[in-house]
Image (tube, rainbow, N blue to C red):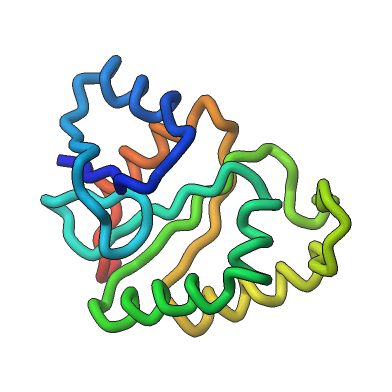
Amino acid sequence: MIKVDTREKQNAHIIDFFERNDIEFCTNKTCYIGDYCNTENPNVYVERKNSWDELAGNCGKNHDRFKRELERLDDCGGKMYILVETDIPLQNWKPKHARKMTAEQMDKILTAWAHKHRVSIMTTPKEQAGYWIYKILHEVKANG
């Protein structure tokens, strides 16, 4: 069963995918790590971001909160996939709002996270996010 974090918002397209494909899920639980996890495949997590801009917030002003989440990931020996809903490569990203974060700075932060923690960054068009969440949570093993 896929557990969907109660704090996860604007994910109707993902819930619709789960329902259309008879994927068992629950939305009344808080995830310890990430936004989605599979109760039958422990220690693999998906953190969904609706854009590079949202992820930039985690790299910048919300860095401390996200750092604590990465520390919990390390403590359990898990693996996290950060799934960004976009078809724009990071190197072509331009922030929507005047921010100090650039694509180059964010790339350095994400590379550091990938080396220090078991984190992978993936992009997908929004309409395929449910598919990729399902695929990651059912096929990837934490020790793989």
